[in-house]
View 1 (cartoon, rainbow, N blue to C red):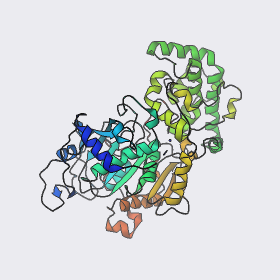
View 2: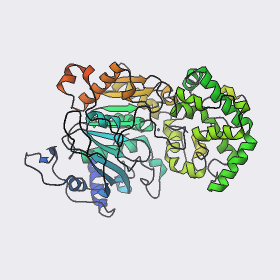
View 3: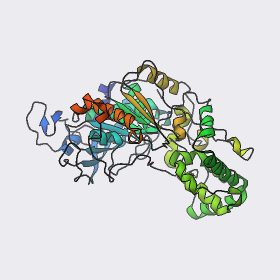
View 4: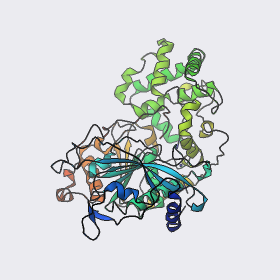
Length: 507
């Protein structure tokens, strides 16, 4: 239900540590190959006969989990002719648990590589959570027709050190993970690099840029919240007073109220569901707390994942609705499995970061009166008590200050109706060649493709320029900018689509 920072690093020691530990971790440890300037061509200009997989696995600490088929062999580029297709690798990379003290142990971090051609730019994607092992392209990857590296965030399983020292889960350590992956792969993919991600992934791309501003050639961050002051959340309250239409807001409030009024009969159903599914409530402490946390998420979750047009599916008169109607609506939008132990376990790293660095929203919801027993429960509620947590109030202030003063080639894309966009990143007078856009009516799936035409063209032109692949016609006239690769339903998400998880109120 909620949102994470830190310092600087010595690379020479790190590379040596990973090289020394890679063999025991089952990683390839052969010498790294020479970088290439184009597909199949070495630096000296001689043709390279080395397969890209062999070159990747020659990186010390890199090991192959599997190479999977990619559904891209028939894709055609808007530049004309068939593309060379993609190859898709699922990999592990040996990382230090603590980048400040790399001799103190390592862990295996999961990543994937959607390889197109070493002569193309590369997009570094992070979700801020687990990495999907199914091939897909982020929007910037489609725009620049490039390669994509996707990295799992540290401490999300299986990328978790054992034993887990949770004090080593912070945004600087995670940025340092990215820096090492980039440094290793840049020797092969030596063209321009862009960082991107949505929500917590957009936050992650921002933090990476803050701590390692010389790595990337541009950043495209989608719907990334910026909770500068964790104690001050009035922006969210203002958002919920005006979002969408009054009719839709009233319908949502009515269902939420009824869910709390009918707590007894609906909790009976919840108890039955828990017994049938083996759900437990040890982390939150009780079924009642889990039930209320789910109901309190209802309005937020609707606007995060849905559009005004979806209000037609909300019970029109909640007072006259059946218990099943209320249950089904809340379950469909918030998900009653979100705050059981089995639903929370996967997201422990997120709640830990929300309660130690990122901050978390706390909204008032006055339409509920005194029906709530616990209010918005803090991240500490959703993390096992065996894991200590202390909040760093300066972490997000540092990030916010740095972006305003130092942003270079950074783009933020927000959704007008997305709650997480209520506290967005803003650019200051020190920003250069950067922009903030808002998709009209957009939710948590807002993309460049959903912007008004002139803004869409300008944003696309900037991404192409930052990646070093803007056609001459676009350099002369940004209004002509279009993605270099055509949209493909097997690899790309359409504008407004959101990858939905059961635990809803998370960036």
